[in-house]
Length: 597
Image (cartoon, rainbow, N blue to C red; front, side):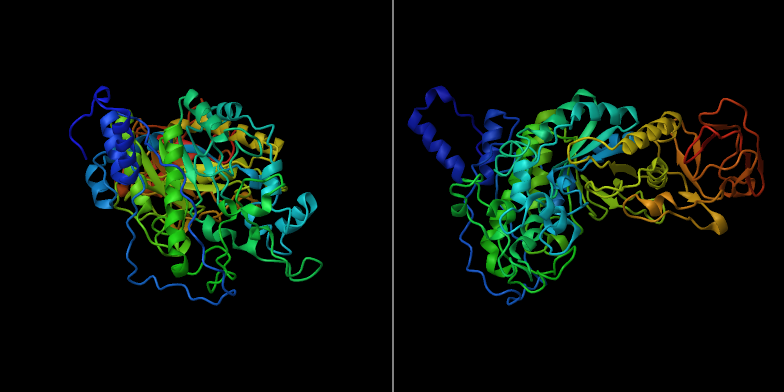
């Protein structure tokens, strides 16, 4: 980096050109020098790079994936923002303050805006991949709506998608009114379609479909409401996720004719998608690697040894798309999907390539926040990242830790019904509330995905559910916001914690029966101990809290109140437990909360 300043007035246009050329060629150090000299709050990003030459495709399942054992991590050099954070976990650990995620403890409850064109398929999650799986629900639905995927594929859905009823401002107002204090907003899913004016992906919501900056509309609405928000990126999967688009029907008139993943830029001449390269949407055919045709959720572990140039290009582009969104929207956190330690880890969903793209993105994001806000007051949610790394918040999808988890900040997440809309979902407020209580009693926060219908509206039953959640939060918010775990998450019959089934919220969760012995605890900001029941006990019955018996020595109790109830609560602290007589509970749903001091 240069330590002196260049005065523009003393430079000729030729010198400026030479300096600009040098900046472009100097890779990551370029962005550092430029930002340091000019004090820019935005990272200077390069133009999109051309996809490298792709080797001729070999027969299906004819190539072994490269062994990940001992695979060296490739060091990327795409531009990053200047600052103290270098693209290593050690540097991030040394320069980061854990206080940046404190607002998440305060907020506790958020809404996952997991919405995009795949909702149009009305087939639940992973529609874009499944619509190329012969005989699946998504395949059949696509045939009915768009025709056969040899020619009318996912790109046609993108052309036609237009959620006219979507109103981010109204939804943010609604979500805030029911008690949500942050949003997690999808920017791009595995389908590779960017929901903003993307510099690096022409297949985006400005160029086709709604022709609107949907991410920008959500971000603006959240900021106006004074809420926190993060942006979610799921496009690491994309390069292998789309392999079904390179298959074909096994029977019938289209048997043996590859689906539209086969198309090239030249094939678009004279078509509606002329000028848009299908490879930038579907990726490339990688079915030559063994196991790529067989997986359901996670590809076989291994390296795409014949496509390392493509892998490097893709990893750089993956990163630059995130940095482009950070430039435009300045989120409070970024979120990367996965099921291993980090994107491009060389294993599980991060398979195919091993590089430090994620560290570099995180370091750049933190440096940019430092320049913009005077401190690195942001964090990265890296799904399933192990404890011990500063700056990284992890997630638990649809499941609970066995007990309290305080070794790292974390977020619980799941979806009502599924991650994309389909008819027939069960909209049950009690399930959402109980998941929230399960997570906060273990020292986590919770974001629930609300299914938005293809036209951008919410199902009437969904609206009813949301208002019921809001009614509960108005009563119990003091036991939720800013709370932390107690000495134990809860208690249950015979000393065992019973929990509802994990996963997305549906009939199994709505039908699960908690018992009167099932209790959960939090400590509120006011220092009071909160005791949540996991069902509504009958009025006049007795709750026994074994953890609060005199012999346990945990708390000498002075008072017990039921939140939302103005009358006096009868209670007695005995040697073996706190005994509470349940008052009239006819106006309550899902869970009671007794506040103890």
